[in-house]
Image 1 (cartoon, rainbow, N blue to C red):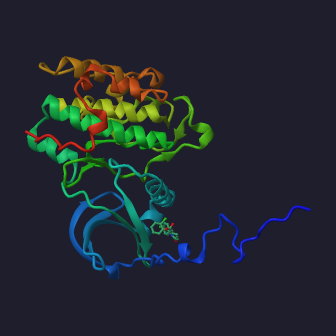
Image 2: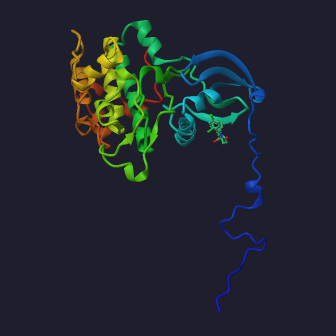
Image 3: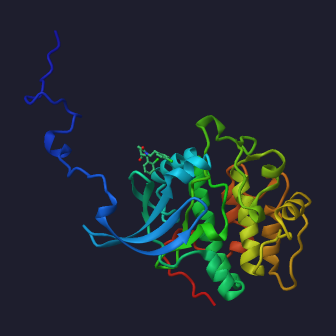
Length: 312
Ligand SMILES: O=C(O)[C@@H]1CCC(=O)N(CCc2ccc(Cl)cc2)[C@H]1c1ccccc1Cl
């Protein structure tokens, strides 16, 4: 017979002992745990307020959703998508979700505070970015999108309003309420589609308008629009109304302003391509996108350690 020396305290080798399990229990937060400050932003379904956690005196952004409004607008499933997606993502370029709680009227998401607000504010303030600032911000957005895609998530509504800036002026992607978690089976080439939701008119990809379905490459189309907007000061497709904008998109009706840098022009024209599979970086080849001459000089490994360039 074989004898095994059973450990004395009954726990076998890989069961943690009692001490390892006695971490301090994390109490569910409530609104009483915070001192609420100024309103940071108002969305169609949410309000974001600055807040200080009274127990650790740290700053947060609390996103508040009104339950009645969510139910009336049939957005309940987006509530869970935002929570599950944000909890799953962990990257310096993605806003962190610390906790969620609720009361009778509202849902609360305790998020990382991005002190410097939206990228859009800076585009409006400066008119446009110079090439080196554009290169830094596009590189940070691209590595954040690359990470999000690596987790099987499509953002689906990338735009300068959803790209926040933290105290170091680093990029933080936010607003994952309309993100799509691809089922593991779906995570193949761009032929795998997530359906129904349509993003913001100026950044919506053609496949979303024609086939009602987004793929990872849809986020690359939006990136192309963002690169264009940073350098030109306006998005490439802008009609006098949503329908006009959609027409320009499906007809690929856009031109570059005089003085638009050559390498950026080449990159944008390789992203604003009808066929999602033909976009530079499609089908999990973002590495090829990173090698485009526009990014010459970017130290990808130092991108999240070096100081952000002075916006001017
Ligand atoms: O998953 C969670 O953290 C809880 C689980 C229990 C729970 O009831 N909720 C809220 C569910 C919900 C979603 C939408 C509306 Cl309109 C009302 C309640 C979840 C919730 C609470 C706060 C914020 C978001 C969510 Cl999904």
